[in-house]
Length: 283
Image 1 (cartoon, rainbow, N blue to C red):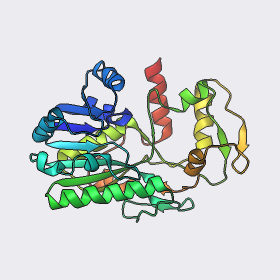
Image 2: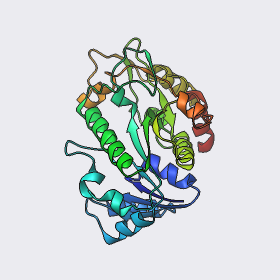
Image 3: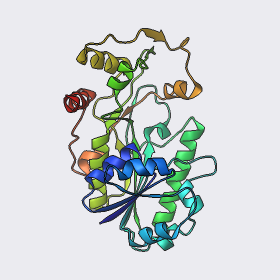
């Protein structure tokens, strides 16, 4: 199995490290490429222009994961490579990393993979459009296609611990607000299992226990014997429009398909196991 990961970043790197075969990733900058290569990953530059090197990798790829964000202009891969599926003529399966943000706001209610997306932000709308375009083209070319709508991603080097230590963590008080999370290692196992099974459709990459962000901050602060940041009322908190927009989506994300169709058990079903694992790795 040969995997090409477009836009290999935090999640893509975790997938690459666990992938049971050849992996090639793409990145936009030489600096990021050098850093990833130093970690043992084969990475090439893709800045929106199709190169012979990339075309050769696509021709031999059996699996592709898209981890690049769309923009107002559309999906950056399809925009740059309109004949994508013609080039990738050995492709068996394609996975698209999206976000649970596409669902919109459900005032804390439970949703599932069958819930219709109702994005409230432009970024969410761009995501849904990209999902749909990839689905359409994959179907037309008879390639299995799966969408992974991911919750808040965390893991080593990118967790509540890091924000608390850097004094960048904030306890924004908005009663009733909950979020799901997903450990980066669980993202990797979800995507790889789906690829191996050539699973299709939508999968919510979310943990089993949506929780208040402040509950997680307080739990993490206690684990490392540091005081939690002061509470700030949501209504008066000084936040960027993007940061404030995250609090506009309030929902509990079900993940039944991970267990039913992929037969998976999350390594970190709640933030407690995930944070404990991160702390153990640090010691």
